[in-house]
Length: 64
Image (tube, rainbow, N blue to C red; front, top):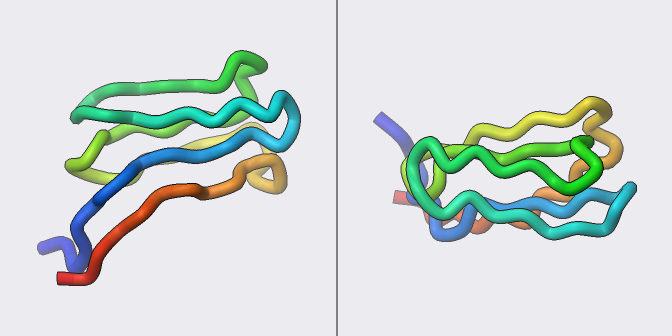
């Protein structure tokens, strides 16, 4: 059982500067340069990067 609720699922790429947001379940979104991605919308947080040093987490969660 999750211990948090997702309010916003987003991130910024420090290479291309793009801010991306996943808005619904299975909404896989990557930045224009392909360095980072987010997925899961408000259901879960899934994220990835070629190099996590370029991933700036902008997600907002709330404890349950």
